[in-house]
Image (cartoon, rainbow, N blue to C red):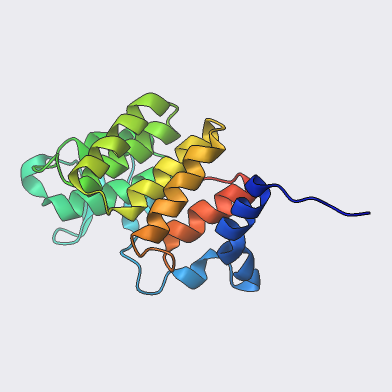
Length: 188
């Protein structure tokens, strides 16, 4: 009996082939050389600090965040860690203290934290804004693709995967995570 394969199945298989080839190596095989887009490792911020406080290396203690106390890179790093720890509102509160709220990284994680907190449309707005600022920001494309998957918009998710590839991101965590999400419906 001859099987017919649709164009849709062929395109999906081609888009997902790198994820399948990961085999036993998993997504972490793409982490080398990434732009810190893979999930952060827990630090004192999520191990020791409570109620939205972040670890201050200088004072060696958990501190309540005030915008003048920390630079945007420190706020971004702490908010990212909190968001991956499931502390979405704490992450948002910290990101809103950034001096440069137009930084695509800040916008992207405002999108991530809002999406994960159940505010999908707010999150999508931040992803779109991040991509307006930097169309080549592949992590925003990956998270936006994962948001599309949550909305059951497979075509739009695959389009983001194609965009990541077209922008040179095929060997990145951003590509691998969206590709794997297309395969198994697990999103970050």
